[in-house]
Image (tube, rainbow, N blue to C red; front, side, top):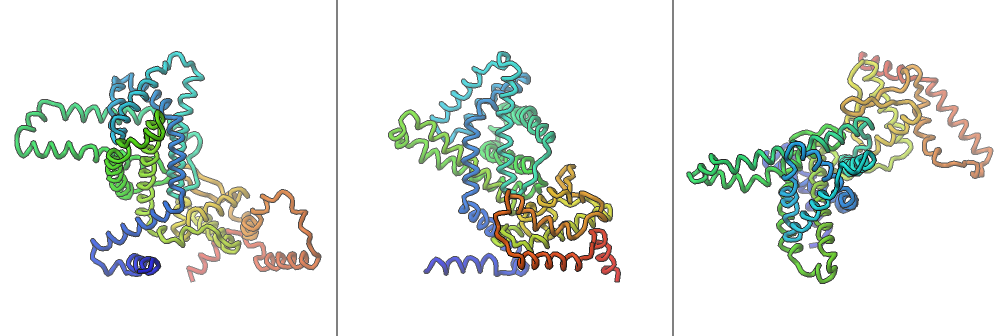
Length: 446
């Protein structure tokens, strides 16, 4: 059977069927298959793999400083001894090599004396740790097609909170879990059936549940947008299962293989560690992509990802965006975010963000920072002329050209261009954004 025929059959099954006519369980399966198709399409484009490789490099540079900062935080709470067991669990797929890597990392951390580093040394540790978190946020925002970032002050405060408070909460929870599982009551109940079977099963599932819980929290907190818990949990369940399965396959096929030792000699342990880091980051990004498409199923079709727009389409998007933003401002409603506008206009976030950025540069829009970044008119609605909105989009690309005098023009063409601009100006007749909104309201009233 030709490959093209198989692709057509798959497309017909996924996209030509009417979901409302299917039973509920079949609808869920079709939706999940559509998400998988979108994730595979993104992987074939290569961007998730590039982001994962970038995070591997940053992790190698930032791991020891980050753990040193965390170690100093946990030491004050008596929880610093929990770092090594957690590292061993994360590196378990590496087998004996994972134990060696964990012990070496802990040795590096122990050798860092924070008291001798001074102010600049401590600041450098925090900067290196913050750089890793910033890279992670950038990767997740790219996965969620978000171009707006948190304000600098909010970003720094959030990063420091993650570094200082997050580990304390995580390791406290792990310590409580370990204390409960080793308590006398649990040991007594383990000898009584069916409690013994339940406790044993729960203990076997606990690592999976902890990974899923950790992934869910990451998917909710890291992207600079509101992520639904259900979408984050869906991505976390799939990514968590994939992470555990990949770890088992990696331990049985790669970590215990002697081929890497033969080829790379003493560097084999580093190569294996980097491969596992890459797979871990890639799986985490795949889960983020699943969460994104679960929350925004309308972004799955390939047509939604096109960002190469004609000038005419950019002008239309600019007018529509300014209309909606101005209307909400005029009616004293909640400002629009770029995600909400992209949903209303049914275009990709990248295409809309490019237009919004253009008008922001021309001071037609300003950003409003609350919980999410939203947009307000940059001037009073009476002072924003429709012709200025059109000119903003038309002339923005000219900024990248430092010298336009190299074009050999003709007077006939110049006269024609001037006549076109004059005709457009007469047709619009100094129409303001306020008048455009008012005329629309009058049309709805009639």
